[in-house]
Amino acid sequence: MMFNSSSPVGDRPGGSGPDTIVTPGGQSLSLDYFVGWGGPLVVQLAKRVFEIVGTDLTGLRVLDVGFGHGQMSCLFALLGAQVVAIDTHQVTLPDAVAEAKRWGVSERIEFTPYSGDPGEIQQTDFDIAFTKSVLLLIPELEVFLRALSTKLRPQGQVAFIENGFHNPLNILGRRIVHWMRRNQDGYYPGVQMYNWYLPAYLSPARINTIRKVFDVRNVLRGESGHWYLIHGINGPN
Image (cartoon, rainbow, N blue to C red; front, side, top):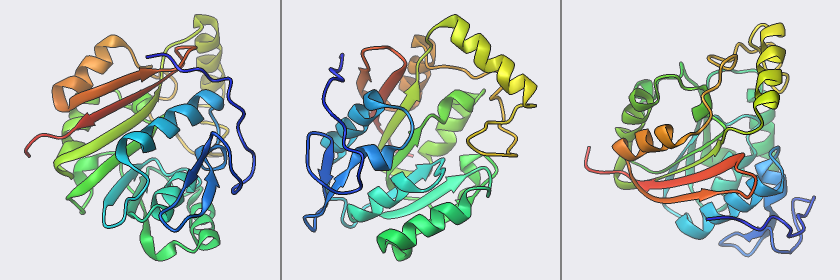
């Protein structure tokens, strides 16, 4: 499925428009703000996530893998979910905690650094697991996903917004930059990013790996092919 990314994107946390989302309490929020980097195509894919899983997440448990600066974790909480947000470093943890305080959802989010192995996460029975630009850093994807599946309840949902392969020269340039930075990403200063020097962009083979673990219901691709949304359902654990 191809997306038309020509719709205007708001640049404020509130307001109304085609790329806003309304909370169960009636608050209108800009997806552009909460999605952060990635551009209009990623905003459109995020909008489809909430068209699929719904915008009233009251009573649901969400696992946000790779919380970054915390915006998406806060969005899930504002939609009523109880969120466990994990990441492999603590560099942006203060920013994420401050973001949760700003939106008044601190009591609904637990920010937790982890090793990169979902099997070590203590909590289980999540209704939704979400990633954005995370799976390309995972060399052993099937191992990672099977561990993740044990943290979801049966029929729990996964929504992965992930990077597709694009211009080979751009990819080569990015790899050279990260080699020069000693495998660090400027978005997270000082953080060693495992496998970032040789990211595994989403490909048909890796999509099939996801299919081996989850019942994939939607594979949505942005017009440029740089981004995908994979939505699936967990089977019995």
